[in-house]
Every structure is written in structure tokens, then in C-alpha cells.
Amino acid sequence: MDESDLRVVAVRECGPDTVAIEFETPPELDAQPGQFVKLTAEVEGDSVSRFYTISSPDVEGTFEITVGYDPDEGGPFSEYLLALAADDRVRMAGPFGSDFYESEPRAVVLAGGPGIGPAVGIAERALAEGNEAAVVYRDDAPVHEERLAALAAAGAAVYVLGADEPLADAVSAVVTGEPGEQLFVYGFETFLDAATDAMAAVGATPDDAKVENFG
Image (cartoon, rainbow, N blue to C red; front, side, top):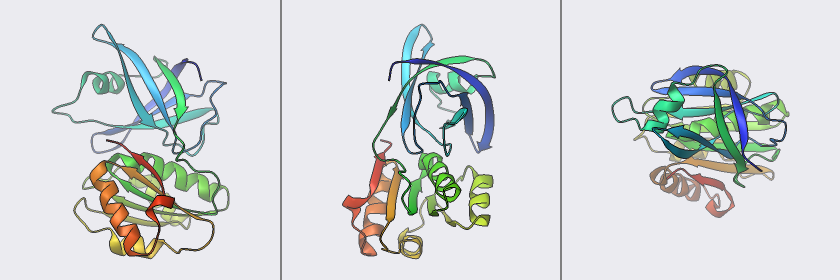
């Protein structure tokens, strides 16, 4: 789609060094949780763009992205996003990506670090549609904890692990191998490698998973 002008609705803290930014959805945007958009802004005299995965369960009326930042080494674009307030504007193109939720009967999401954004969006959407959901999330400083607790209370299987904890037991607990089950994996490359090993160990086929590498 062509570039759109987005209006900021709200910026909220959602965990250590992490904010959720809610935008008003432009009329032409049709996106699913797990897809990502490209945001562009003028920063220090240059046009700068970065990609962010949608972390809301849908884009009806508004949609959300989750932005983590390093308070000691944050880049100019992150600082720009952190300074946004309601009614500010930023440009957007997208959506992009083919590894997103498509109403599968059971969504199992393995998320490392920033992968929690699409994980909560997919799980919330699955439950809202009457489907099953499970999340295995690994991070030493978890974010979106309120949403994870709400998912667990609504019937999703939720496992939150430390950054160095093995994935095998949690993955074994959530992967059933039943027809209609879809695995999603979101995170940095080192997490993807660990998730691939864990999936293979329980007899899942890693090539059948929907995977987004965050770098």
C-alpha cells in the first residue's frame, strides 16, 4: 500500500524500557496480527525508517506497535518515537510479511524478547475467534505482563521463561501435534535457533512454522 499519515492516539509504558504506541488506523489499512509496518519520520534532518510488528489483535479503529529501547544506547529513531504524544503524526507503509495469524484453530507462539508484541496480538485474536492459543515467552525483563495474565485467565497456556532458560519443557507442554495447530516463532536469530531445536525435539516440523527473524 502507499504511504499513509498516522495519528498517534496514545503512548503507554508496558514494561521495562518498553512502550506501546497506539495509532488511529487509516481507512486503507488491512492487516493481521503478526504482520509489520514501516514507520518513517524526519529525524535530525534525515528521513529515517524502521519496521515494527503489529502487537494488537486487530486494526479496527486503532492498532498498536510495541517499541523497546535502551536507555543508555537508544538511537535517534527510538528517541523520536518515545517523544511522541497524542495527535502527533508519523508516516507508515505496509503491511508487510506473510507469517501472520490466519484464523488457525490453535495458535502456538514462541516469542523471544521483542517477539512478545506479535505473540500477545495473535493469542488475543485467536481466543476472540473462539480458537485455542498458547504462548512461550523468553525474556529476563518481561513486558505486556498484564496482557499475558489476561490471556492465561481466559484459557491460553502461557509460559514465561528467563532469557537463559531452556525452551524444551515449555514447548513440549504446548505443542500437541493435532490437526489445525500452527506454530509461530518471533524473535532474534539466537532465539529462532533455540526454538527450532525445541520444536524438533518434540517432533514438530520447524519448516511448517511461521517465522519472523528480527535480526
